[in-house]
Length: 531
Image (cartoon, rainbow, N blue to C red):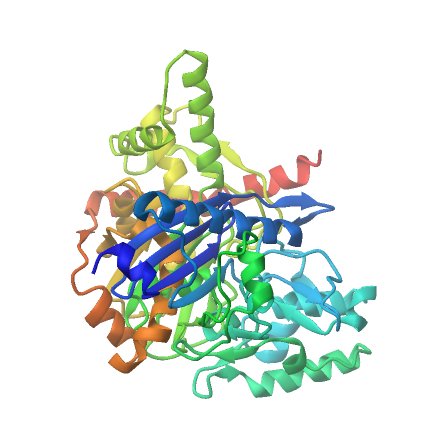
C-alpha cells in the first residue's frame, strides 16, 4: 500500500520528540518506514542561573513541528492529514515542571541541564541506597523542599517535559516506565515506583514540613503497549490550530529520549546497548543482573518495557563541537565561499580521520553546563594544548569529536571494565552519526567493541517514539516489544558495523588518561572565569 493510502486509512503512527535544540516529528507506517518528517528549531535559555524553556515556547514548538510535518505530507502526497493510528510524545528526560491544583505553573521549568540539586541528590542517594543523579525529577523536588521555596506547598503535579505535553493533549497524568525511571527509582518486578523508597520520600517531606505524597504528585507509570489516553478536542486544537486534526487518536505512554533511543536502535533486550549522541550524550546497556554496588556516575533506569538499564549519561555532548563548525562556516562566508552546513560537517569530520589516534596531545572540554560524571557543577567550554602538541585541523576536529564522547566513556569504563557487564552489540544513533564511518569509528575505539549504525540512525528518538505508538495499535499481538522490533521492524533494515581498530583503542585510552588528568584545568577555569 502506498504512503498516501496509508495516511488516508489512518494506518500510521506519529512520533514527536522534543530535543534540546530541535523538535522533530516523524510519521511512519506500521513497519517503521518513514512517510514524512517535520522539524522546529528551538534553544534553551539560561535565566537567573537556570536552564529553561518557557511553557509557551513548548506549545509554539509543538505547533511549529506539526505544521512542518503537515506541510511535508501535503507536498509529498497532495493530501492534508486529519488523523493517525496513534501518536507518541517524547522529550528530554528528567527535569521539573511543577503545577498547582488548577494546572498553573509554579516555578521555572528546570531542564536536565540544571545541576543545582547536589544537596538533595546526596541526601536521597544515602536515604535510598540508590544513586539519584542531580537532574532527576525527585532531586529537583527535594531540593525545592530543602530550600523551602514558597511554591512547594502548592505543588499538585510534577511532570517531565514529555509527560507534561502528553497531559496537555489527553488530560491523562501518566508516564512511560522508561521516562518514569528518570523521575524516581523503579521496581522492575512490579513495574512501578519503588514503594519502599516512596515511603522514605514521603517521610522526608513530612520531616521538612510538607504534606506531600509522591504518588499523588508524580504521574502513573505505564509500560510499552499500555493505553495512555486519547487526543482530546483541546489537545487536537493545541497541536493543529487550523482545526484539521481530529480528536480521539490513541496515544502511547510518553517516553524520554533514553527510552526512544533504545527503541530506535533495537536495544531493549538484555546484553544490548546503544549510545545516543547529541547535545547530551548517553550510553545504555540493558542488564542481565543488577550492578554489584551503587555508582554515582551510573544511572539505573529501565527500557520502555521495564528491564533494568545502566546508563552513563553525560550532560554535555556536541554543543561545543557544533559551535566550532559554526566558526568554520563564518570563515567560509568571510572568504566568499558558499558552504552547505551538511557538507561542511562531512568534510571536517572525515578530515579528522587523518589525525593522530591520541589527537596529537590536544585536549578539549565541551562543558556548556555542569558534568555529573566528572562531578563538576558548572561548565566552561575549554580548549587546551601544550607547546609541542600537534596542532592541526585534523587533530583539532578529532579532539572535539573524542571529547563529545569523553565523559560518557568514563561511565562505560565502569560498566565494561569494573562490573564486567556483558555487551553483545552496541548501536549508535543521533546527529553525531549522520556522517558515515566517523563518530561510529571513534565510539568503537572508546568502548573497544563493534558499533553498528542503522540507516535510520539520524531519525533518532522521534522515530523511536513513533515505533512505540505503532506498537500500541499494531504490535502487541505479535509479542513483547523486543520480539516485535526483531520480527517486524529491524528484520530488513540495513546497517553498517565497524570493529575497533587497536591503534585507535590505544589512542583513545591515552586521550582518556589526559582527559581525567586535565580536569583540574576545567575546575580552575570555573573558579577564575566568573564574568
